[in-house]
Length: 310
Length: 310
Image 1: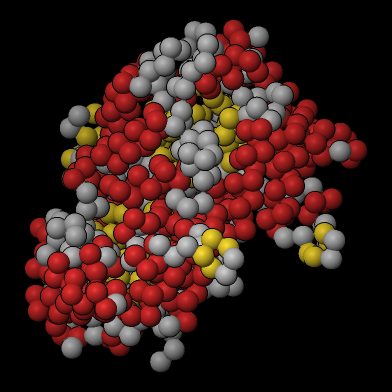
Image 2: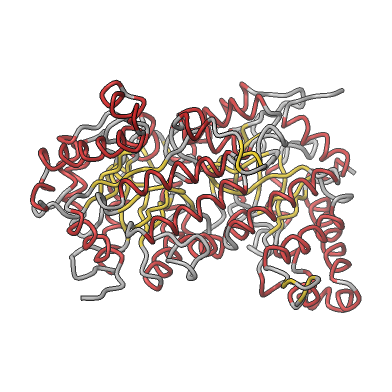
């Protein structure tokens, strides 16, 4: 049945690919495959860093498109290259969607009032609804709940979603997020608000278009938040290279293995650098990425309710 | 005396221009002067929205460069136009610096670990130190104090600065920022941390390269924060169109009229739309902007310690 609810669209993709794994696209110049990194000339012109990121990212997408529901490009690494990096990013988003992937853009944007609206217009909804054309965007809540309104409204209109930074995976995340207030830990108050937004925007899958970023590195909090937020989609970073195991992310899912996507970036896209996949990588760096993707999918299926999707 | 400390550089500019007023560059298509908005053709090609933003912004810069120390472009409005908007923004930054203005980029960026470093690399420090080449960037602290380290280090290295969102000017800013914790209001804890970073990075002017964004719409809090943070530069939005008066921002300054910049965006850059400047604008929209800039400078000088700069 056709739907224009982001949660339904993502859930369909998860069921189709039978996994909640999302591949993070975090390119870094020094870690590109040698064949791309050392590409000197393109016709008579030098291959720019942005072109190298685009070649690399499209190479990843070719491999993972049949395997996973979505990719999560990290905007900072494209912004680091200047305007040409931003153009490469836009090209990559379109390329991924043409291959049947959804795109969760990790930009952690936000501002107040009409400026938050400008960010929502910039990123939420496939082209030409927005110039970047992402299916979802990560959003920072620090400025207040009023700043989430433009994202909710625009996402609803454009068949898109957004994920609010609720509990991030870094060591310092406790400092502001976990502060003990008169009404309990601060991020629990935020959780209640996000769950309200999710409940108001529920699709037929039972989840809403307002999601939450919850790090894999704090499994007990993940379980607590899952129980507090039955209608909220989770985006779980921190799996793999950042130290979160498949067991650590199990609590992110409902009993059907739905309600969450698990991101892995470095562990997959730089797999050709690791001893485990080195021999595969000798023939083709993309094979190493493919093997690492299969391995992460299996790890998650073996240790979480995502096994229900198989 | 030559210096590579952002606080010293900004203070020199404030003394040179004899005002702490900063002009916010927040273009919107529907509000551009008719002569730019309706520009149909450029040679044989259509004038793009991004080109219109660039023409408008450069027209503002031509007017305000002799009058104020810095501009504050709002990234969201350029991102709203896609990659071409980001290219226009880069061009505008260079153009402004060539005219002797400093550029505080309002992007409210942040992330964790090496990703925060990528944002710092992207924005902090004049070209070619960074591809965008800003003198300072606004930064969101929600993910924790560890996320401020890359900005501190990179700003120190690149003669740049950054402003942490401490107390924003919107109605919802109280929800997370003002939460009452075991150790007092949350933003007071953040204030203590920012002041430490500022103290460690002090220039000869007595201020550091880590600053704070504090809205003009909460004058009592501004006074309290000024007393808590004697080494921290303030960036004060909310003056003018958002409702903050010159009296409201007086507490942002030290006794010499230093330590803060006051931003005005819509009240200046769209002055040609207001009845007060309408007759001036009929001949030339830039004249209206010039008049509005002079008026804001006088208002701040008349009601705050910035009078000391004259």
